[in-house]
Image (tube, rainbow, N blue to C red):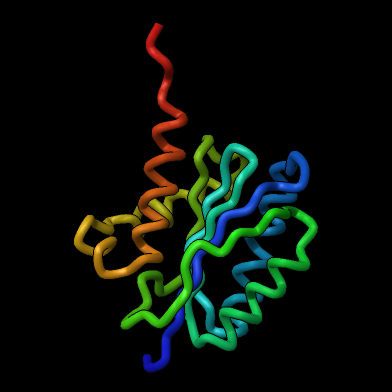
Length: 148
């Protein structure tokens, strides 16, 4: 696909989100993004979101504007954006730092775990994948039990 564009951002949740609110957010994002041809990955954990979105530039920017209007989060910081040679995610994925609280989240987590075989070489080829791996590894490390 020609003229692909990718963008990554982090944000903070505006308040504690209930599991059913996260489910609704996930399902709504998947449906809207599919309607405009945007794919990517979304992480949620520790009152933060990280997202990589990819597609045609106009479509990705349309999704970003929708994200900026959402009330679930604030302090949106774009980390990287620019053209990419290919999509990294053919469908939509969501990973959770803490164990999923619902069946919808558990299914999303399984899809994410199947989609994460990205390596240092992939990270070197894409600033977006580099950011994705950085945040996933950092958040996963934050969840490790502290030795006493």
